[in-house]
Image 1 (spheres, rainbow, N blue to C red):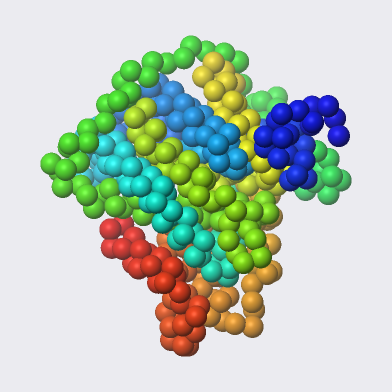
Image 2: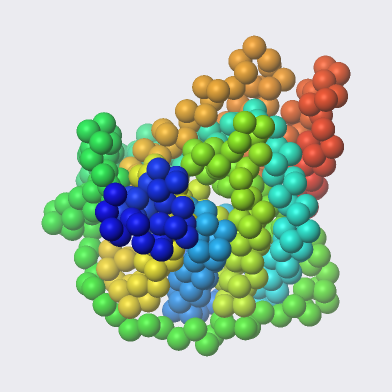
Length: 436
């Protein structure tokens, strides 16, 4: 073990105890960052449609991600990165602002209130209790489902999967430069991982991006650029407007979706990073959910929609990340984007897409551990996993899985499996659909 590994970093994060090293954790952080860096461009573009200033949201996105991820890593000590959530940002813009014709300031107020409610649930231990109440079968199904969800995101970003008016999805132009380069990146990751080359995913992403720049399939925007002003969105939320407009149901919808998305992400990450004990309880989940809840309130103050735990964290975990140092590395890399925005935006989608698909393959191994002799266990778990990519929502998949699981256990008189926690989550799942 090197002298660096014996430092206070090792002692504070328990790096050696987790079978990792400082170098591995930093590489893992880089892998996670590269797979989710797209958010610093995509997210401001979505919120711009709500009438918000692109530059301000760009800065708010980076700061929210950096602060929240640092808290998750340095305090909760989880290898999980956070950023404004996809799906939730679409609901913010196209559901609340455009669909309900509400000012974006009021929408930010609703986001803030949903974060406060989540924080209260987390501090009281109720959120931790609910997550630990998730049966092992559903934990496994959620993990696999998130893998499938990652896969469809990656395949779509690469252009392999496209929408089709008759069959919903279809095969894209496999001869296009983007698809060919993404395929090359995917194969490189497989080969390097098989050869146990450190940083296989990172090498695949960077190599694919560089080739893309050289052949003209992607643009290299430069290295540095000015930092936009945060003033147009900082502290611009309108909490009073939420109550005057009667948007409590919107607050609850944001809460439920964020709650289930986080439960799915943290549960999946816990499974593959060794944080689940023999009884199925997740180690250190209390601090993790508090950090996640605080992230949404912080993000709303800065000027962005719900900030949540990212399933792309699996890229870093696949690279060997096991401690909070992975997340701290991601936080620092996000901060660097404030000054190096053009460089960060130069990583094309077809370069990060194969990383998502590769990680997806790793996540789906959870299905192997299901009890395939009990259909009341495996059927709800598999159904939930399938529904995540098909509905393009982690929350929907989890909700459907719990409803079916509870009904199946009650109908077969397995009352010891239909625990209070299961019934509560199933009830929340019903509410999720009612308010969603």
